[in-house]
Image (cartoon, rainbow, N blue to C red; front, side, top):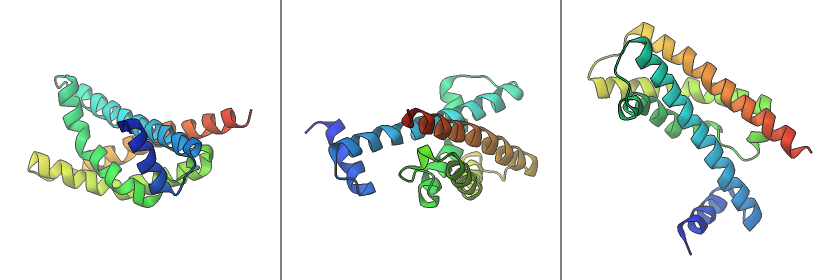
Length: 153
């Protein structure tokens, strides 16, 4: 069994899907959401670094994004942001995304504070809350809308 098959089997067990076809669809759905979310956090970090005239290498941008992405990927699954079939329900996706980001945001700030060894300023915390909320909502809701329309054909 190769790594792809093992990953599909693990996802199928975790989501309760035992059909190979459903397991594969779930695997690709999760890859889409995880990949898109990671890109959103990289975009947020790149915009922030650029607005502060900081040097912009991919590694530095990734390190800036890491605390918030880690907070998101730790908390969001527990709130249902990766729940099965959410990718075809734009309203549910928008709600779950908002709830998950509200819960993940303080975790990301905590990780950022630990990494920087200082408490992030309130203005930074507010900008982070609002900016990532807008970016995550736009990406995930648009994704759900497009996937729902594509499946409906």
